[in-house]
Amino acid sequence: MDEDPNDNAPAPRVGATTELPHDRVTVARFREAFPRARWSDRLNTWFVPGRTAQKRISRWLAEVEAEADAFADEKGRDAFEFDPIESRYLKAVPASFEIRTPYSRTIVNEIREIPYAYWDADRRLWTVPYRSFDELRRRWPAIEAAAQRSEPEARKARREAIRGTEEDEALKARTRERRRKRYPVPADDRPPLTRAIGTHVGVVFFIGMDGELVDPATMSAFYFPMNEGGEYVWASWRPGALEELVTTWPARTPPGQDELDRGWWMPTLEELRNARRDAKSRRRARQRRDGKV
Image 1 (cartoon, helix red, strand yellow):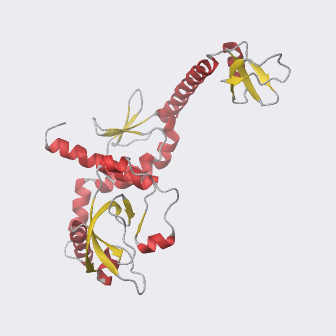
Image 2 (cartoon, helix red, strand yellow; image 1 turned 90 degrees about the vertical axis):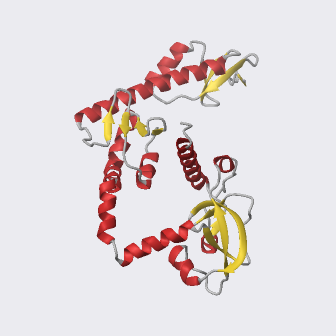
Image 3 (cartoon, one colour; image 1 turned 120 degrees about the vertical axis):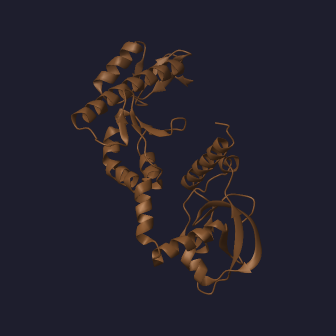
């Protein structure tokens, strides 16, 4: 606990300090809740005496925050009612917005940028509180466009449109190559086999290298350009299990250009988060196949 910060206090007193927003309403409510609170000019903060002061302050701040959230939700609800988003993918319910769309990585990435958005795994939909309406509205055009592109009929139409073309053959070749679960690594700078590694195809665990040399054309077409004069070998990989990914410590900084050119690096926190979400999805899919959910 903090001691009384006032210089003219006759003796140190047990208590806690706290900072408040500089608005009169909040300060007045604070003084009403803590009549013994005193202001310290030296520390530019409030001091509340008592052995339980920190706990009481924390509880009061939580109540104020909850009230502010409720007000923000009400404000967002009013904004939606005044100018609603009309979409078959969005439903407004009393507590929040519910978003249900076909799967799309673009949609996932957009919704993850919305404050307080939450994936409800049981109902297979996203929930967004009314307080986040402004950000939801800003991102909604991209979300809805991606949802429309991801509808089964739209996917089928795109496949039919490119059937037999060079683009179609290139996509099939890329799919076949990725199913081989191999990746080019420098022959003289190979990644460790004991931890998660960031690559141009995502976060993986390498499980072995047999020394087979990589064809530069294959590498450039499906992975990344080979460094001039470099020699690469194929490495086998597997996706990480959720438990492995959760315990992997992230890199402090993003990969530099040298690491990107090399083709592997220590994964960042954002890369690990994406890999963990994918691992959770794989686990749920296995559980559904096994009848466990």
